[in-house]
Length: 82
Image 1 (tube, rainbow, N blue to C red):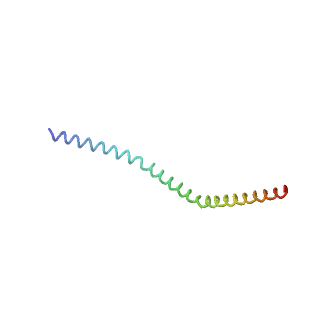
Image 2 (image 1 turned 135 degrees about the vertical axis):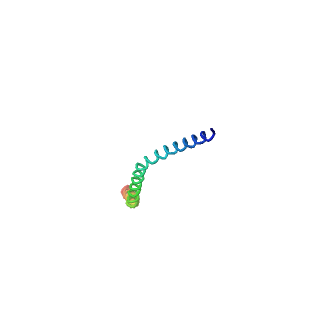
Image 3 (image 1 turned 45 degrees about the vertical axis):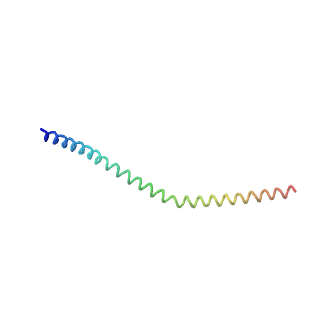
């Protein structure tokens, strides 16, 4: 009698395992597509990193030019006043 109980418990565990494996296997294609999409987006982000850095450097250079121009304008205004 004890062997039947052990056999039933083992069989039940195998059925639960099979159901769990089936659930995972049915999701694999969707997970694979998601992984490919994430890799594509990562490549796009890396491709944009260089131009973004160049744009940042250009913005900083323009900011420096603007500050220099503002100083010149202030000097010109001060000369006119005094």
